Length: 404
Image (cartoon, rainbow, N blue to C red; front, side, top):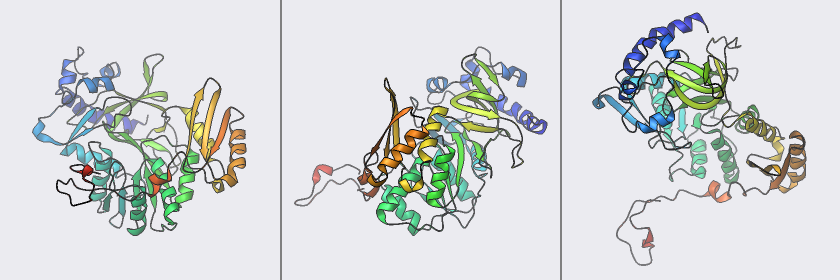
């Protein structure tokens, strides 16, 4: 690690440890709170189970009157965890997100297509964009008011310049745009994505479809942004805001780099200090020269594993003319079974090419478009109404008092 980076971390660590000493969770620990970096290295990991057991305010290190927002994670890996932030915490969240390499400008129209309700991701993107003077379109991906057809209309009609979403969402938009007959989005200058591991081939395909660069960010609801992408496509961990370690579950040991599971100590966090928080994401962390000149460590997020990324890489290395955007796979006693959506005229070529790319290690089946992603999901108009109690003759009052 660069000595200047270590100095920055050491300058911030005392305040982080002092904040942790005010947290009921860390005060109750048998070992107390570490006094310095050397003691921190031997301190027990903080786990997701710890956060769940501390629900809702067992991690709170400030008076509740100082809280600005309360959030919960998506719960994709189990019971959701709570997290909370002061206004000062938000200043840091916004600063980290606004480091995005394409910049956020007053001239931007920024479509935010990640969740708002309870989760952090949509709110931090909106706050960062507003802090830089951009116009925000709060599309949300959990709202019935913005199905894919509506999103594509907004992208086109509002001349959206930046988007924030899951990588998969951008492919769904592309399919919805094709059904709507919309092919021209000249204002779009970048697609910002996070929330899923992303192979180079899928990134390239998304960029080719939309004719705009795809820029990754990495983080969590408990921590906010942890890494941002440089112009050379590498994710750099924000090691000036956190100490990162890589945990080897087979040995129980941590190292500064290598392959394993990510552990994070937040250095700028008042409301909910996190010491050696075991996020659990499978990663590869490395220090070394990057063409961009940054001395921050580089992280590769593996998610469910390198094998899944390799499979995704093979799917999206198929020629773009085949039109393959959606796929699924599973292992069974008979081996790997892969389905891809592809039009009849490319069916044989796509199956042949993907089977060859997988070295015969899979049974590949082509299914018609609309099998994996129903056409109705891409073309349905918004169907939303306020609750009603009074209906006229012939009206469907089975919808009374319900939101759609």
